[in-house]
Image (cartoon, rainbow, N blue to C red; front, side, top):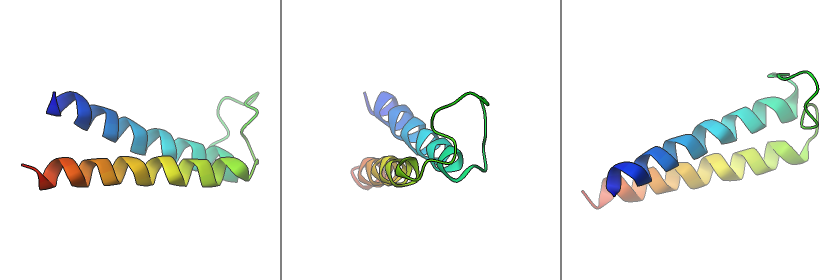
Length: 63
């Protein structure tokens, strides 16, 4: 179960970073994405990445 939660937390961090990249225009892939250069996705990505990091911290702390 812990392994699954760790995988979910890592995926949340990665997805958050991608959302930040698309929101800032630094990662314009795919070119037809509605998220490119849209500032709300910067905040959403940061929140998702932060949630993933908190999840990883809590999982590591309980070990």
